[in-house]
Length: 234
Image 1: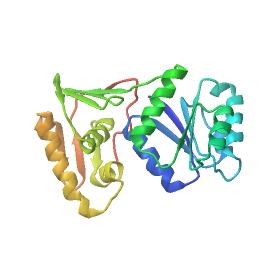
Image 2 (image 1 turned 180 degrees about the horizontal axis):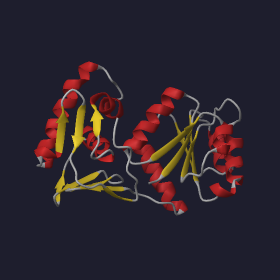
Image 3 (image 1 turned 120 degrees about the vertical axis):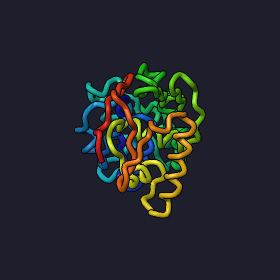
Image 4 (image 1 turned 180 degrees about the vertical axis):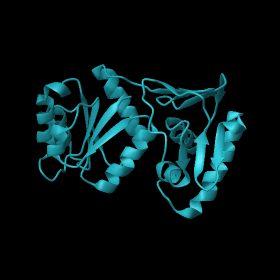
């Protein structure tokens, strides 16, 4: 699994971004300060905000580049600073890319994949269990050897269930991960998406309803190519 170090002091933004990246198959470690970044375990890629409370992000980028265990790590600056001078300074300080907030998660993932290709990092994660094969990099799904076309929400929902295959995932957890809300009024939307997902996969029994709790992806085994299973319960 590709490991991401997210350096962002805005807690709400960091949590939302981390959740979205995890849905796309990344393992995310969050820190709020430069000090936390400098003592964090090595990662494949660093997403670096420039406006940190204890050190400017440009200086932090240079410091990260000095860490021997981060020698092959890709760095993308994700910031609200739009001036060309800031972009040039950021890239010259050692960043591999520079993107301006706000941006769509799809664009950020595409930039991450491009940077990892250029730096020789690992790109792409495939999750497999039972009849399912899901390629997170291309967002493609195969069930029992048959390609399955899913909407964005259906795909994200399947990935959350698949990453915890065999475990029961609560409705609240699914709503937070896929819709970024736990509002009870969204439960009906979740139920409709589960029904459509079952129909498209052609295996109604693959996603089991656990009354009063949530849903469980039925499987006798869980295997991944390039990924480790997430905890099996919520």
